[in-house]
Length: 545
Image (cartoon, rainbow, N blue to C red; front, side, top):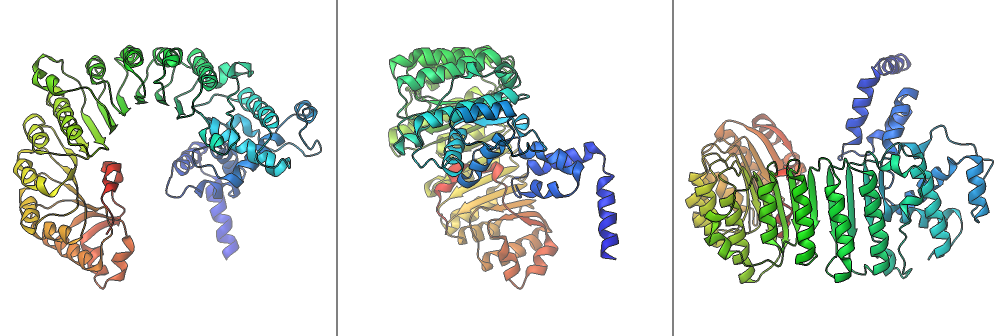
């Protein structure tokens, strides 16, 4: 009977249309919760394996590459070499088996994503595990092997979609004292490999010398020459030394070379002259740029003209706020500044200096005022009375709000919240407050609120909020661990308002450890994880209980 059922299942699976199978596998490929699900499809049947293998090999050199696994990636790629290519490797001193048959799949043709640091890490471990070259690897062997792997990948590529170029600072601290960045122009097929590139990222930290700068500049120039359809660019490069102006010019040309750039992420490790090059280049994407993320904002007077020129730029993210020009004069003369078009703002900073807090507050107020009443969402790890007042006065469309609240801010919060009539999603991060403050906050929440998220310590703060909350919210997210007593009160709250559509909690198992688990399932539609998409990373500053 079991054999018959299994045969029927296999027959049903085999009858799936190819397009349907491909869509299922693509979904599994993008599933971050169960990332290994795709591998189980290899054993389903030949058709499923044929469609799954290209997805598995789409990004073998991803961000979270494992040391043991990466050596086998290189060995598998080497096994795909033709006989004459194997001879070339052998002539250069590598041990390559000529008797081993080529695999059923031509794995290099499936690669769509490259990270130079992970390629170097993979080759280093391959030399150690398959070529018996002890660590640290000899530089000449590593250079040769990386060059040959580069020829194999770029020569076989049907088009990369993601390319990340890192300065290998980890190798430096491991005392090998060199970075491998081969010349891309020497690879056959480089024009085809880069022609469909969608994402380009580069990251170089301290220890970035002139030689590395010249090599990186050659990379940037190659990408500019062959890639004009990039949608996202990320540049985290230390460019404060005067000698780096040519490299900064290369980055500017890369930006200007794109036909329709959608998003860019920058770290402003540069002076005014280099900032002028970058921000001027960004205005070449005035009609396509939709998202801008700047880290270590320093050049506010360069930022605003770019934001005004980019008419479709709706998402602005400012993080790690350290140095900035005085913005108070800009706020005083805000009526003379052109409006900007942002609808979603996320801003955070890491500083305990009061002067910088004041500057940060002024910056947020300025962005709110210039958004021309179009701001729909705001996330920030700093709040004061002036920011709240500006949100209340100048953000009639605000529907999503994530705030880090201090005990002193609570009176300002529940004074201004009732005016935010469009607010549907509110996430609050706070350490503690008085019972009276929590009760007033719960009573002052806007009537249209559908989603409430809370991260606080201790848990009784959540208890007192729910005790006084009368609005029938649909979703409740709690971003810190809860105990059985609080879970019981959440159930009572859900019963009081009728039904809670979704509860997001960190420790879901607590539901099954209390006697009221059946009551929970009756009045709570879905019990799962909190929605971290609406949550800010800065909220982790609040300690767990």
